[in-house]
Each structure stands twice: as C-alpha cells, then as structure tokens.
Image 1 (cartoon, rainbow, N blue to C red):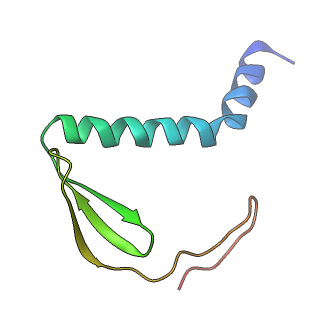
Image 2 (image 1 turned 60 degrees about the vertical axis):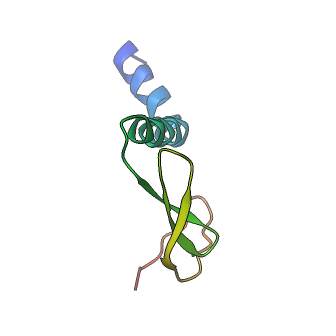
Length: 75
C-alpha cells in the first residue's frame, strides 16, 4: 500500500471523530465571537447565547434512530 493511500484510509476511518471535533470547535468559536447557536436538546430547537442563556425556539419532531451503515429516505 502506498503512503498516500494509507493516509487516505486512515482519515476515512476517522471521519466521524473528525466531524464531531469540527462541530464542537465551531460551536465554541461561534459563542466566543458573540453569536447565538441553535442546538437540538431532546425534542426542542434551542437558541444558546454567549452568556449561557437558553431559549426554546420551537418543538421538533422526534429524532430518527439510525444504525451505522443504515440508509433511509427522508420525508
């Protein structure tokens, strides 16, 4: 296996962890910049402010449970 192929395979295997880290970093950077962030908490869409206050924006439909590798058609 060539080095670039091995590096690509390694990165592909770690996409979920890399994506999680990127989302968490973006969340904290947005708050640090003074922006509000929208997050899902249980079945609510919640606005989080830089000062830590939370405001429910609206109720959301229940989350769709999925397993790794499962394919679904979204409504």
